[in-house]
Each structure stands twice: as C-alpha cells, then as structure tokens.
Amino acid sequence: MSTHSLSPELALLTAICLSEKKPVVPQAPVDWDKLVRLARRNGVLALVADRFGASFPEGSASVAGEVTRDSVLQAMHNLMAMKKMLDVYRGLCGAGLRVFPMKGPLWGWMYYGNTGLRSFGDLDFFIDENDLRQGIGILRDHGFFLDGYRSFLLEKNRLTRAYVRTDYQLAFAPYESARNVQLIELQWRNTYPRFGNFYSYAELMDRPACYQVSGHTVRVPRPEYQLLMLTVHHGLVEQWGRIKYLSDLVLFLRKEAAALDWDFVWAESSAKGLDRVLLAGLYLVSAFTGDLPVRMPYAFEEIADYPFEAAYRSWEEEASRGLTKSGKILRYNLRHRKGLANRWALLKGHLLYLTEWRLLWHKARWYSRKRDGARPD
Image (cartoon, rainbow, N blue to C red; front, side, top):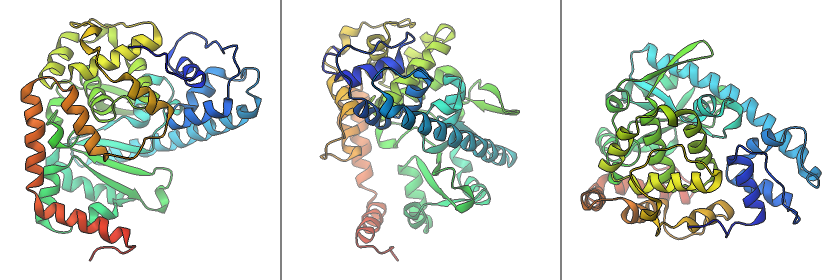
C-alpha cells in the first residue's frame, strides 16, 4: 500500500488539496497544464486557487489566471445554488414533507468553511419515500421537471411502482428560470436497493443536527450518519475515485472526528459490511495527510489486498471503457463488502432485479429510441 505510482503533478495536487501544510513545489519541472486538467477531473480546482491565493508558484503563470477566474465562477455558481437549495428546502418542508438537503453546497458550508470551495453539479435531497409523489409537484412549482427518462418511465402507475421499488432517486431538470442549477435529485435510498438497503429517512433523522444557514434552520442527519452516507456514496459507489471524495472525508474528520461516536460508526459499518470500504478511505487519509484522528478497531493490514492503485489511476486517467458503472459497483461490492450474508444479499438483489421484466423492457426501449434520436411513444 503505497503512493509511489503518482505522477509529480498528481502528487503535488494531492498535497495542495489534502495537507494542512503549505505544499512544497518539487524541484523537477511541473507540467502546470496537466495539473490543472487533473484538478478539473478530480473536482478540486477551487482548492488549488484557495491554497495559492495571489502567490502562485514560479512557472505557473500560464495557468494562474485561468485557475483564479474559474474558481471565482464556481463560487458564484455555488452561492446561487445554495440560495436555490434553501428555497426548495423551505418549500418542501413548508408542505410538511420529511426531507433534508445533502452534499452539494451544504457540505461546502459545513466542512470546507466556504460554500465556493466544493465543486458539485446537482442539488441533492433525501426524502421519505411516502412523500415522493408530493415532492414531485413541489419541485415543479420551483421550476424543475422530471427528466425525459424518468418522465417516460413514470407515465404508467405500474412502472412507477416498479421504478420506486428498484431505484433510489429521481432527477429533475430546470426550466430556463433555474439554469444556475443543472439538476435536482430526490433520493429515498442511499443507492440502488440491489446493492443493499442501507438507511431510511427515519433512521437517518434519528436525533438530527440543526444548523443556521443564511438565516434558515436546516435539519440534517447527525455527524455519525453523515460519515456513513459519505462512505456509501464516495467509497462503495464511487470507490474513492476522485480526490474530491477524499477531500470531503479529510475535512469532515478535521471538524467532527474528536466528538464522533466511533463505537456507533464501527458497529453500523460492520452491520452493513462497510468496514473495508471505510478503512480504505481512512488509510488514504493517513497516507496523504500524515494524520488520522480516529479510534479504529482494525489495523490497515486487514486491507493489504485493497486495490489502491486502481483509485490512483482513476485520479490520473480517464476511465477506460468496459463494464457499465453498475457492473463496476457490483464487482467492487463482491470483493470488498464483508460477510457472506451481505454478499448473498447482493447476488439475490440482482437476481430479483432481473425479474422486473416490464420495467427493464421499457428502459431498453427508451435507450433504443434515444440512440435513434426519437422519444419513445
């Protein structure tokens, strides 16, 4: 388990984004254009601008203006998105819906100390499944409508029930008046149920935390559940495949680790088979920051066979074609979810998904017609 395979540009980028110390620019020449490309791919360009401020290193003049300009544009986008998030959240809560915002600008505000520093494209909300239909109507009032794929699948009640049973989110595209946000996503699960039923709204909002954000009270899951949600998405689904995901974990731990109920976290991660996934994230934190403010019941030797090189390659290179994203998630889960019961549940969930023949036929029909440039009837 080493980081020796990182290019000089990627090694410098991780130091810029993850270490609290001032990054030391290596003596060897740095390809600053490559570093900026890597920063964009990994969603951390604003962190580069923030760490260097007005004092970019010698030799980086060709990219300094670009980095500064784009980070200012991201900050403006994030501020508008935060306003939209609070408006939509207030509308959903005002109708009595059980919902909370997640990730996006909120994590920038909570953990980065600056909404503008965390990159994101969508606004994500977690909603109680029973409130989903009403939530669709409220989002329409706020200028967002179901994207074409979901709109097609949800036209028929039978398909709606199958979709909600087998999926975890609905995506909503904005009208022209809301173009400062690309999408809003309503989630009622942490991921596809065939990968595991993790947490319901009621579980996540057991003893919620409350924050005052721009004069609005925002209720979200307590930090222990924030870490578990982060592990599911960043680790289990995305496989720590961008520096941004590791940055989220590093900054979360700096703020929350000392007061966290680690006995609860490890008990939950063990019950859900997430131990190796969380341990891999913590190893990366230790490797790239030199610090780990965490009480662990395991040693890193337990994940000596973890494919860290694959994570480093995904930071450095465009993903190669091959398995679909769902196929990659399944393969990763089978390798790294602990417990035979969890692995059997994975296989059983996928087999049951294949019995949803009506839904699968309509999905295939949609994609077939889309490739042909026509919307399904």
